[in-house]
Length: 104
Length: 160
Image 1: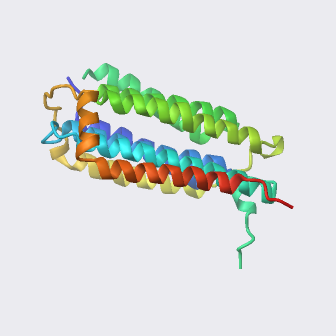
Image 2: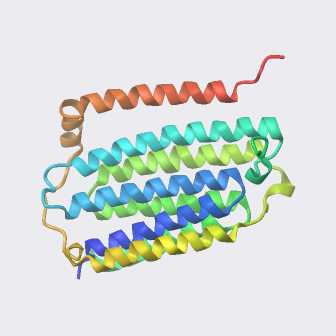
């Protein structure tokens, strides 16, 4: 028995929701970054799975989208990490609930 | 594509991701994130996209995880490792997972076996990148340059 597309989609949905959990419920800025990276990786897994199970696997569109998406995720991680470090320099904390200077 | 390999990789990946999201110590979470990323790369190999799997290992495990570990090193304060947990996020994440899996399981056209394909070689990917996808490739190059310069500007020490 080979795994079907449904199983891959369930795993990728689980990864997405774990990333969502990390991004929403942790208060440390680096955990939020980890969650966003995990959600992006889950989306990439969906692209590859749909490419492999799709009607025209000879046309590697899904692979191309995944490659570009990985490059963009790397750029996003670099900027996000730089933001965390800049915030730490200003506030001496990475707890996002303490960053309330814009609060009305 | 064997079912046992799928089950093993799925368990390792989801366990690593859960540990990365829920562990108290930040550095342990970052190392569990590496496990989750390696599991996703193994999924790519299982699906026949070897090049994407290698790129995943290079970029995520080699660059992003190391970047996160260095950020932890630069911003670490012992008293801040455990700064609380927001239970509302757990409810939202569980609800989203419920809706997504309900939608996936209800769609019967998704339970298909993979069609047989010839292997996608790196040569073919390179040729397509250099012909059909040349403009996206250039745009990604510009984007990466801009992101790196932006990151440098953000972390540069202000002159006093």
